[in-house]
Length: 73
Image (cartoon, rainbow, N blue to C red):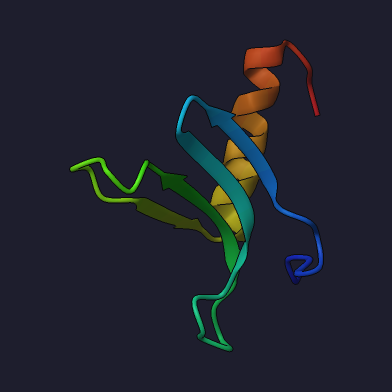
């Protein structure tokens, strides 16, 4: 099963910090997933962080978020 690559990124921001959730394969045609990108201001000493989740991990995240929201899938 494939992950939809044409879905627009979801962006959250607070002050100068930003988190994006987007499709990514990191340039590898045999790899795909959903990437979480945590950006910080350019003047910050903290480096940006990228986390790539594969399909199974995205499904686990969906299930956990459903628990937090009190909804069952």
